[in-house]
Length: 118
Length: 111
Image (cartoon, rainbow over all chains, first blue to last red; front, side):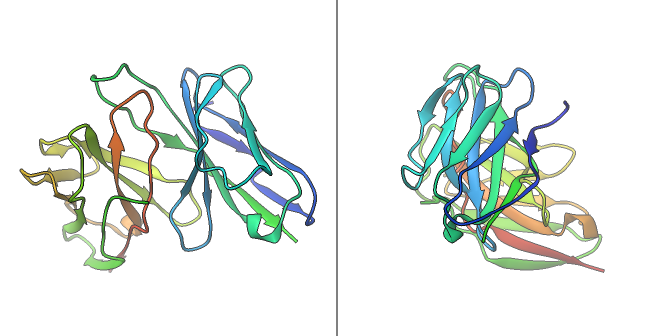
Protein backbone atom coordinates (compact mmCIF):
# COMPACT_ATOMS: atom_id res chain seq x y z
CA UNK A 1 0.00 0.00 0.00
CA UNK A 2 0.93 3.65 -0.16
CA UNK A 3 1.41 4.17 3.56
CA UNK A 4 2.06 2.40 6.83
CA UNK A 5 -0.86 0.11 7.66
CA UNK A 6 -1.75 -0.98 11.18
CA UNK A 7 -4.28 -3.61 12.14
CA UNK A 8 -6.58 -3.77 13.90
CA UNK A 9 -7.52 -0.11 14.21
CA UNK A 10 -9.21 -0.83 17.52
CA UNK A 11 -8.75 -3.68 19.97
CA UNK A 12 -10.62 -4.27 23.22
CA UNK A 13 -9.30 -7.03 25.43
CA UNK A 14 -9.76 -8.26 28.96
CA UNK A 15 -7.13 -7.80 31.62
CA UNK A 16 -4.70 -10.69 31.60
CA UNK A 17 -5.21 -11.62 27.95
CA UNK A 18 -2.57 -11.74 25.21
CA UNK A 19 -2.74 -9.38 22.21
CA UNK A 20 -0.89 -8.96 18.94
CA UNK A 21 -0.74 -5.73 16.98
CA UNK A 22 0.38 -5.77 13.35
CA UNK A 23 2.29 -3.21 11.31
CA UNK A 24 2.80 -3.27 7.54
CA UNK A 25 5.50 -0.72 6.70
CA UNK A 26 5.97 1.10 3.44
CA UNK A 27 7.50 -1.28 0.91
CA UNK A 28 11.29 -1.06 0.88
CA UNK A 29 11.60 0.71 4.21
CA UNK A 30 14.26 -1.05 6.26
CA UNK A 31 13.70 0.83 9.51
CA UNK A 32 10.57 0.23 11.59
CA UNK A 33 9.56 1.83 14.89
CA UNK A 34 6.91 1.17 17.50
CA UNK A 35 5.57 3.91 19.77
CA UNK A 36 2.90 4.10 22.44
CA UNK A 37 0.80 7.20 23.02
CA UNK A 38 -1.37 7.85 26.05
CA UNK A 39 -4.05 10.50 26.05
CA UNK A 40 -2.62 14.00 26.12
CA UNK A 41 0.98 12.83 25.81
CA UNK A 42 3.48 12.71 23.01
CA UNK A 43 4.35 9.35 21.45
CA UNK A 44 6.69 7.25 23.62
CA UNK A 45 9.40 5.22 21.87
CA UNK A 46 9.25 1.45 22.39
CA UNK A 47 11.49 -0.33 19.89
CA UNK A 48 13.32 0.17 16.60
CA UNK A 49 14.10 -2.48 13.99
CA UNK A 50 16.76 -2.26 11.33
CA UNK A 51 15.86 -5.07 8.96
CA UNK A 52 14.99 -8.17 10.96
CA UNK A 53 16.87 -7.26 14.10
CA UNK A 54 15.88 -5.05 16.99
CA UNK A 55 18.50 -2.31 16.93
CA UNK A 56 17.13 -0.55 20.00
CA UNK A 57 14.55 -2.00 22.40
CA UNK A 58 15.31 0.35 25.24
CA UNK A 59 11.76 1.70 25.34
CA UNK A 60 9.97 -1.57 26.02
CA UNK A 61 8.50 -1.07 29.51
CA UNK A 62 8.86 -4.65 30.76
CA UNK A 63 9.15 -8.26 29.65
CA UNK A 64 5.43 -8.50 28.89
CA UNK A 65 6.15 -6.54 25.72
CA UNK A 66 7.87 -8.16 22.76
CA UNK A 67 8.13 -7.36 19.05
CA UNK A 68 9.28 -9.32 16.04
CA UNK A 69 10.00 -8.64 12.41
CA UNK A 70 11.02 -12.06 11.05
CA UNK A 71 11.33 -11.21 7.36
CA UNK A 72 12.31 -7.58 7.64
CA UNK A 73 8.94 -6.28 6.55
CA UNK A 74 5.79 -6.84 8.63
CA UNK A 75 6.20 -6.45 12.39
CA UNK A 76 4.09 -7.69 15.27
CA UNK A 77 4.01 -6.14 18.73
CA UNK A 78 3.02 -8.71 21.31
CA UNK A 79 1.73 -7.92 24.79
CA UNK A 80 1.30 -10.69 27.35
CA UNK A 81 -0.88 -10.58 30.46
CA UNK A 82 -2.32 -7.22 29.52
CA UNK A 83 -2.98 -4.66 32.23
CA UNK A 84 -5.35 -1.68 32.25
CA UNK A 85 -2.31 0.61 32.15
CA UNK A 86 -1.42 -0.80 28.74
CA UNK A 87 -4.42 1.00 27.26
CA UNK A 88 -3.09 3.48 24.69
CA UNK A 89 -2.70 4.09 20.98
CA UNK A 90 0.14 2.03 19.57
CA UNK A 91 1.82 3.69 16.61
CA UNK A 92 4.10 2.18 14.01
CA UNK A 93 6.42 4.10 11.69
CA UNK A 94 8.84 3.17 8.94
CA UNK A 95 11.62 4.92 7.08
CA UNK A 96 14.42 4.43 4.65
CA UNK A 97 17.89 4.46 6.07
CA UNK A 98 21.04 5.84 4.57
CA UNK A 99 24.64 5.26 5.38
CA UNK A 100 25.98 7.40 8.13
CA UNK A 101 27.07 10.88 7.16
CA UNK A 102 24.67 11.26 4.27
CA UNK A 103 21.68 12.23 6.35
CA UNK A 104 18.62 10.78 7.91
CA UNK A 105 15.23 10.38 6.33
CA UNK A 106 11.78 11.08 7.65
CA UNK A 107 9.65 8.45 9.32
CA UNK A 108 6.10 7.83 8.11
CA UNK A 109 3.53 6.88 10.72
CA UNK A 110 0.46 4.71 10.54
CA UNK A 111 -2.89 5.66 12.04
CA UNK A 112 -2.28 3.52 15.07
CA UNK A 113 -4.09 0.77 16.95
CA UNK A 114 -6.19 1.90 19.88
CA UNK A 115 -5.86 -0.76 22.59
CA UNK A 116 -8.32 -0.78 25.45
CA UNK A 117 -7.81 -3.21 28.32
CA UNK A 118 -10.94 -3.67 30.42
CA UNK B 1 13.92 12.37 27.81
CA UNK B 2 13.09 14.85 25.07
CA UNK B 3 15.91 17.28 24.35
CA UNK B 4 13.63 20.10 23.24
CA UNK B 5 11.46 22.69 24.97
CA UNK B 6 8.31 24.10 23.40
CA UNK B 7 5.45 26.26 24.67
CA UNK B 8 2.47 24.06 25.50
CA UNK B 9 -0.02 26.02 23.41
CA UNK B 10 -0.36 28.86 20.91
CA UNK B 11 -3.15 30.56 19.01
CA UNK B 12 -2.99 31.95 15.49
CA UNK B 13 -5.50 33.78 13.33
CA UNK B 14 -6.46 32.12 10.08
CA UNK B 15 -4.44 33.48 7.17
CA UNK B 16 -1.68 34.80 9.38
CA UNK B 17 1.77 33.29 9.81
CA UNK B 18 2.20 30.87 12.68
CA UNK B 19 5.65 30.95 14.27
CA UNK B 20 6.34 28.01 16.55
CA UNK B 21 9.52 28.25 18.66
CA UNK B 22 11.68 25.42 19.95
CA UNK B 23 14.70 25.41 22.24
CA UNK B 24 17.31 22.67 21.87
CA UNK B 25 20.27 24.11 23.73
CA UNK B 26 22.02 20.73 24.18
CA UNK B 27 21.88 19.72 20.52
CA UNK B 28 24.92 17.82 19.27
CA UNK B 29 26.75 18.37 16.01
CA UNK B 30 25.36 15.20 14.46
CA UNK B 31 21.73 15.89 15.35
CA UNK B 32 19.14 17.22 12.96
CA UNK B 33 16.09 19.27 13.98
CA UNK B 34 12.85 17.62 12.87
CA UNK B 35 9.29 18.89 13.02
CA UNK B 36 6.23 16.68 13.03
CA UNK B 37 2.61 17.47 13.65
CA UNK B 38 -0.28 15.36 14.85
CA UNK B 39 -3.83 16.16 13.97
CA UNK B 40 -6.40 14.73 16.34
CA UNK B 41 -6.80 10.94 16.07
CA UNK B 42 -4.13 10.61 13.38
CA UNK B 43 -0.52 9.47 13.38
CA UNK B 44 2.24 12.08 13.40
CA UNK B 45 3.01 13.66 10.04
CA UNK B 46 6.47 14.76 8.92
CA UNK B 47 6.78 18.48 8.14
CA UNK B 48 10.41 19.44 7.64
CA UNK B 49 13.92 18.93 8.98
CA UNK B 50 17.27 20.69 8.89
CA UNK B 51 20.82 20.60 10.19
CA UNK B 52 22.07 24.19 10.24
CA UNK B 53 20.76 25.96 7.15
CA UNK B 54 17.26 27.34 6.86
CA UNK B 55 14.93 25.06 4.98
CA UNK B 56 11.66 25.55 3.10
CA UNK B 57 9.22 23.16 1.53
CA UNK B 58 5.61 23.25 0.43
CA UNK B 59 4.36 22.96 3.99
CA UNK B 60 6.59 25.24 6.05
CA UNK B 61 9.89 27.00 6.63
CA UNK B 62 12.44 26.11 9.28
CA UNK B 63 14.72 28.79 10.68
CA UNK B 64 17.65 27.51 12.77
CA UNK B 65 19.78 29.96 14.74
CA UNK B 66 23.47 30.16 13.96
CA UNK B 67 24.42 28.49 17.26
CA UNK B 68 21.77 25.80 16.58
CA UNK B 69 20.37 26.13 20.08
CA UNK B 70 16.90 27.09 18.90
CA UNK B 71 14.68 27.02 15.85
CA UNK B 72 11.35 28.31 14.60
CA UNK B 73 8.82 26.56 12.42
CA UNK B 74 6.89 28.97 10.24
CA UNK B 75 3.54 28.17 8.65
CA UNK B 76 3.24 31.18 6.30
CA UNK B 77 -0.54 31.28 5.93
CA UNK B 78 -2.19 29.19 8.62
CA UNK B 79 -5.52 27.54 7.87
CA UNK B 80 -8.03 25.87 10.18
CA UNK B 81 -6.65 22.51 9.02
CA UNK B 82 -3.28 23.41 10.54
CA UNK B 83 -4.77 23.05 14.02
CA UNK B 84 -2.67 20.26 15.55
CA UNK B 85 0.04 19.43 18.07
CA UNK B 86 3.47 20.33 16.67
CA UNK B 87 6.51 18.43 17.85
CA UNK B 88 10.09 19.64 17.60
CA UNK B 89 12.57 16.75 17.79
CA UNK B 90 16.33 16.40 17.60
CA UNK B 91 17.44 13.22 15.91
CA UNK B 92 20.85 11.63 15.60
CA UNK B 93 22.18 11.15 12.10
CA UNK B 94 22.74 7.42 11.79
CA UNK B 95 21.19 4.37 10.24
CA UNK B 96 17.71 5.04 11.51
CA UNK B 97 17.73 7.26 14.55
CA UNK B 98 14.71 7.08 16.81
CA UNK B 99 12.53 10.12 17.28
CA UNK B 100 12.05 11.16 20.90
CA UNK B 101 8.85 13.19 21.23
CA UNK B 102 8.22 15.77 23.92
CA UNK B 103 4.87 17.31 24.79
CA UNK B 104 4.76 19.54 21.72
CA UNK B 105 2.89 22.78 21.10
CA UNK B 106 -0.86 22.65 20.61
CA UNK B 107 -1.56 25.18 17.86
CA UNK B 108 -5.11 26.44 17.52
CA UNK B 109 -5.89 28.32 14.32
CA UNK B 110 -8.95 30.48 14.81
CA UNK B 111 -11.21 32.06 12.18
